[in-house]
Length: 213
Image (cartoon, rainbow, N blue to C red; front, side, top):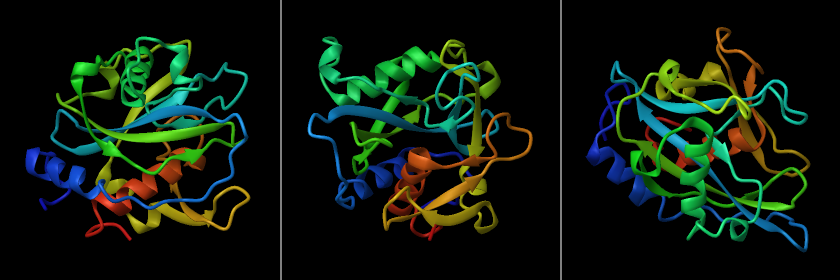
């Protein structure tokens, strides 16, 4: 595959899609009335041609998880609560539009990673990997201020650096996962952790094993 310092292009994105066809199966405990949810991990090229991941920081005034670094969206209700959503993929696209203003047509879905629970096990979260077609500048993203405090991108080359990562146990399980340091110039928490980090680490292990271990 191409070096990670170069802009993502069709051949590399197709490789990512093929690699997501075979993902690990985890055995997590869910509540009896578990609800289905979706989240989007958004890959992008910056205007400088740097392959990156788009993140949001939850509104600092929110009652829960304020200031937390997150994937670009998370749907917290049943899919059937939204009759316009034909699938969980549609849910991920719609929520992305609502949170950061990117229309569904602006994002190519490359595949889906293994579902996993939220903190209480009340949600089964399905992580979708997407690619934002046009190069972006995080400063130009028109996010929803009621849910999002700010938006930023981090280069993939930064996220895979060994000095940026630390291995910890995932919640109260025997599964280990990787926590990522956040650069000092980004507001909010100093780490990407929890479900967002688990997804980021798992997806990287599938799509770029040559560069990430």
